[in-house]
Length: 253
Image (cartoon, rainbow, N blue to C red; front, side):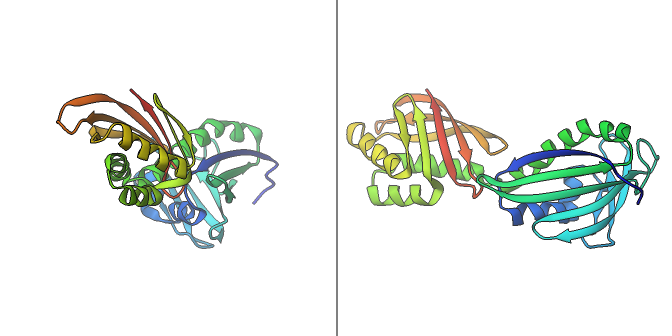
């Protein structure tokens, strides 16, 4: 390969483990979900890379290096030879540990600056697609997680309620709403206990489908008294961590 003096770098934080994220880079089905229908990858040195972009352009390359779950390197170029011919650039995908999960970094090297500049917007778009792909797959059970949260809130038995919170929420859980500004799972458990003491018999139920985007979930809810009468309603914004646990809940009444 000729000299590649020009490069672009881009990073994205993904709330999933490095092993999980790396799997999305090496599995053909998920590779095609990321890049476009018909795209394939053989995740081994010498393996073929085929990318069929959503706009119809086709790119190809060869895998040069695979070090799970740390990095993958492959050549890249377009069948049409514009803006760069096959094999004329090199892509390095590196995965580093991050407090929120994984820091994914791309370094794309080019022979000329014009080709590099042509790919700046493309990588911004492709990393956004990739982050959404991982989030949608990893958090496919987000609806059940939200329902477990509301069930725990309305659970009158303290032992059952505390066990549920311990399994579905992170230790540094934060809850913010009209009546809450609480940090730490232990404090949230005590806060829930106080709610059952002062407003007993109230349960919360989800209404309608959740809306999920990049580890953030919107869910509408209604609070119902033991008599069956509606007490209040609102919407909660949930944030999920790298393990799919609830890390933060902000409620709007």
